[in-house]
Length: 515
Image (tube, rainbow, N blue to C red; front, side, top):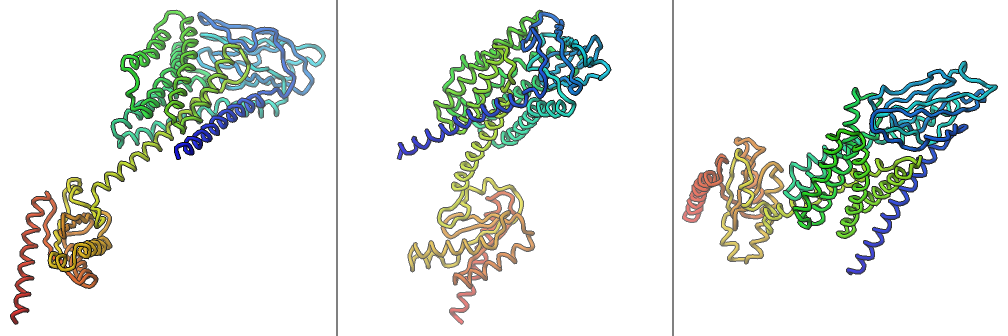
């Protein structure tokens, strides 16, 4: 049996690994496809596809010439990394984006060149000026296209690169909201996991801000702050995700506290260096260290998930690692390929968040079931007296005791007596609403605590129950009632009334016997 389960687990794990690999490959293929030029490519000799770091705010100028065919008067720039971007055609400023204090990436930009500026009989000169605070880059292959083709392709690129990030931020925000709701009713271990995941989600949103379009953020200092937080945000996010996985798999007991404090301190040290450094070059150093450390953390998380066989995390973690490897390779090798890490981040977080919520929801249901079973009388299926401590004050307490049950039990045996108790419980349950409580106190003694019925109507219901029991069971019951304030007080008052009722019944029986 164990080998069959292991074989099934291995097959399922292999399917998830293949699925994550295929999805990663398909995503990379689609992003490459939408970035394929649909017109003549403008070839720059230098400065294209490379990120140029600055130690202080600066700019880079790139020149080239192109031929105009009378149709393609729209230039598509697939990816511009700058705070300000100027385009000159034949010496005339044709377009300008940004004001020097915001992030123009990751949107594709399009420039329409007025026909009066273009020469059909000779080469046209194009000059682009990239302004940046920490660095600039011109990626992809800028090309000429017709207006219709350019608008269509720019819209497509922006949907996959920019809009999808906003969707990811929204989904992550929703996960935080759901986690906060689930947190309220969680136990201590669950709360710890929720705490870590909420923190990871918040930093994940912060890191995704880098992948959104900010044409102007108001001031260069604010842009630098965005850059610093978005650079170190993934380290915070992955650290807390690691703690989340650890809490789920081992209860957070397998990690040495001192080592855990070190892991918590690393992202704080990195962001402190970036924020309080006097030179922009430290931002670049922190960025490189953060990328390497984040990649290492992803593989550590992957190791723990495989080690503890958390099968539901296989797909998102493998997908995250593949997108992380692709992005890291593209950055260090100055590739013009699309970066896919932001897809990996929010896919991982959404999958992880929903999985944890579902997992702990199942645990909560299981705990609730065990709790409920502990409060249920196994013979009759009604509440036992343990539930009384959980019932709020208010309502009417009714004490019930079957007439002549002891004699019936002695005469016909306990099995028959148990069947009578079961049938009695079924009769009463059919008349009681879900807001009310039907409880077996012990033996043939029961009580009803009415929450949904006015006190004036309680006696009507009890009398109806009495008649049903007489007709269906052949026996009745005695009862007493009292306001439900505390159980002891209500029981004492109801028991006194029930005793008086029993005495009246005995007296009536004696009269029948001697009459």
